Length: 307
Image 1 (cartoon, one colour):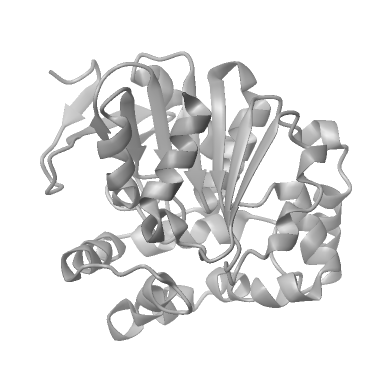
Image 2: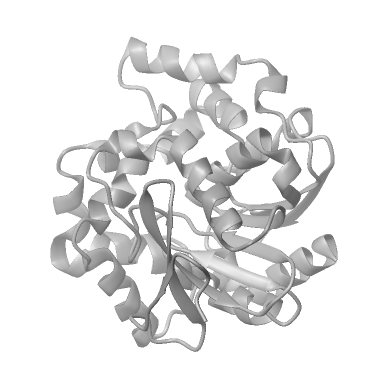
């Protein structure tokens, strides 16, 4: 039986419970497993809910484990206007889904862009977060600092300006989405994906509006290598903000693959200034895609932290 206001669907081929929720003016698709306290998994770019299948199976044995498609991705609503991807709206999407599922608090686990939303959510709604788990997603103030003062991070983030460009959709979809498959399965990635999962990713990217939806996260964000004095001033405004404005008071676990070629380990320096109770787990041999490369290790870290 679907929750009130929810449409159940069978579009995805999996044994999880797939539903739609109408929240915050849009429709979100999510997959769910198990019952009990809520643990919500939030993906990044260019992924979708299926990035967390292993975690849904593992944590669905003791909790209600849910992985959503963020707005703009896969089966969720895909507004065309980049302004519809402002961080405040993304935060309210998560709060709306949590409430829709019948919960007032949750464990929040997030990777990449999902982590950007989760940092903001924990800052704004600490009363809704039992514990926060961030996987290779920099705190916004530290990332702003690195973009300003670390030339290596600025070079590593150059792709963001490609993603912000008007030609991004054409570039990323060319040759059967080879750019995106290289991001996930090449460039040092140790993720050994199956042909079936590769096809599922391509299907998710191919849905009308999905590529633009994902790219709009980059187009609306001020945090990218600056190409003008005005852009640099916007980044400086974040980097020099009072720590309290971006602080996180909930217990937080940060798991970091140190071979991440896009988000360098400098993003860990000074993190304790913004997180009151911080647990840090570094995985030296893992890349940005550590959730796929070492799922059991990642799950073990999460389990020991949340339990």
